[in-house]
Length: 206
Image (cartoon, rainbow, N blue to C red):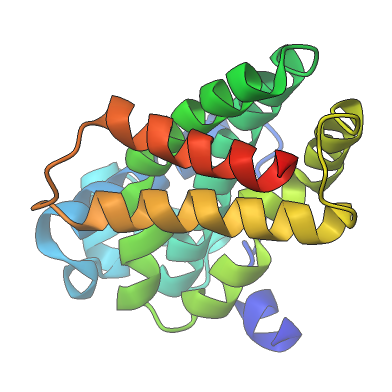
């Protein structure tokens, strides 16, 4: 597994602003092509052409289109993590029901914004499956989430916080991902957030 993930790592990390701009153009072009035409259409030549860079410049940073796809996943996780960390910290001292509802609403926003990267792209690129399971917002936010749970320890009745975190995480993310995939469900964002928040609070405080 580590070998496969290493194969997907960037060849070169951009150090200067111009280099970062080149990488951003490559990633933006790749995402645009994959969303519009599918992963198979995103050849390295096509990505370089749309990005406005030479194929040589592309290969300076990425060994393959799989490596570019992996970078898209890592970027999306990084962006979502920062948004969620700020939200959790901002709601640390608020009453548990209010804080939980606000955090769940932000999770819904970030999962929707990065839905293609989090859910659809790994299905098109088998190698990304393992990467997507090892590079997640939940893992990056572990310490922040645990601090939040300790902050509300008097309200949380589940004895084992690790179990509480695991169950609540999968209840929230699983429900949101199912909601985003099912276009036929007759429920609003607000209703979904209310129901998930109610379920999580009842579980934690039972």
